[in-house]
Length: 303
Image 1 (cartoon, rainbow, N blue to C red):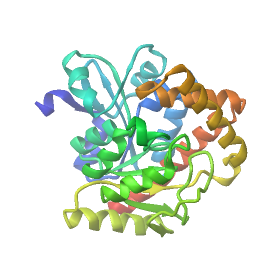
Image 2: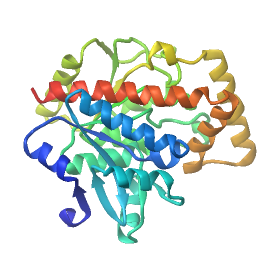
Image 3: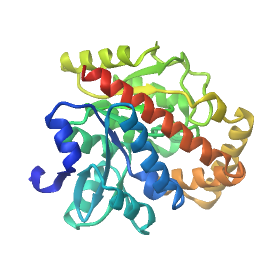
């Protein structure tokens, strides 16, 4: 059944067969995260950065019900400009496959498909987490559960700053998910390099991160690892400005009753408007930075 539904590109299949480093990439950022054509340009640049640093990119998405690891350039363009592509998390995969629909993968579903394909590391922008007010709404991203049970390491710029970062870290601790800070002691807050919250351990080289990942799975300790990689200094946003923008966006979402899958895209769009597009540029650059680090870790894991 898996062979009939999971499709690997020729490049990804050969790389995995020959034990070459491969980095998984999500497709929600293409279909739901950015406007066309910036979304496609960003996706192709991310793939280029990974190749330039010695690894093979595997952008993951769902087309006509097939789980694809290694979208072609034409498929990425299709995902970027086609309206109505579903945002797919774990719960949505059976429906999208059975109904032969198109789907853009979130952090959770990208991890699932990456593990099916045999890809061990994944670069994204920021993970989902515990939303503000979750003590009454119970709005908690499926990304956190996936990190607890799926054997894929995730490189990100921390959790999206629209979330409750303290509760997100508490949830990850409860689930036994190791949070490493790359050259930082503090959890990055997506648009900014730091927050008030500590990571579990600071690690200063890709090789050391690769050693930790390999040992975790050699010991058969199930679940992923979160590698928090701060946005480059030159693209980090003013903390006061971004917090004010987030507060404004969250208040508007509450007034309009926006929740669930629609919440994060709405908040990011509003923040982009309030910051006059600066947040989008920061988003793009942090994704590039995470792809670079993921490629370096993947190379070290395969040495």
